[in-house]
Image (tube, rainbow, N blue to C red):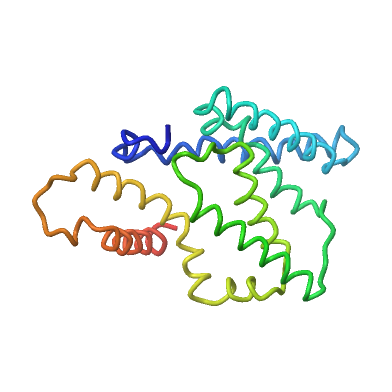
Length: 211
């Protein structure tokens, strides 16, 4: 399991997400081309079908095959299709400030619940994954809202540019700290604060030198 104590010492465990994302990047464009050629350009219909089928599978799998439901793409496709449905303009768009602020505020609340209230005991993904996914979707769709304006400020955008490198670096650093937990060094160098700062330093290097 991803949150098992043993997992916290495996520095490359987080690369499981590449096994979910890469097939999407490869096969989703092919699917769109096939729909354009043979499916009457009914992109939303097929994306919605995949969303519903995968979500049902995810809810079932979280109860019966929890590790497979966490790691494998058939159980996670619905999350990717939610983003696809936004891109395909499946959801009605509103530009009313009141509506966009309510949407983004609700989205932020759902994300905060996910961050601060989910624990090792939370059955995930399943129904619980709706909170961060729908929360993110609401924020994406609420263009012009207060939350989106904050997220568009330069410091936050800079963190967003580093986000992939932050993801790649954070887990190895924390896992190695956990693996070498008894090493005799000053406590600060094993603290979460130091590792977060180190993660940002490595991520900035990766972004500017590699990306």
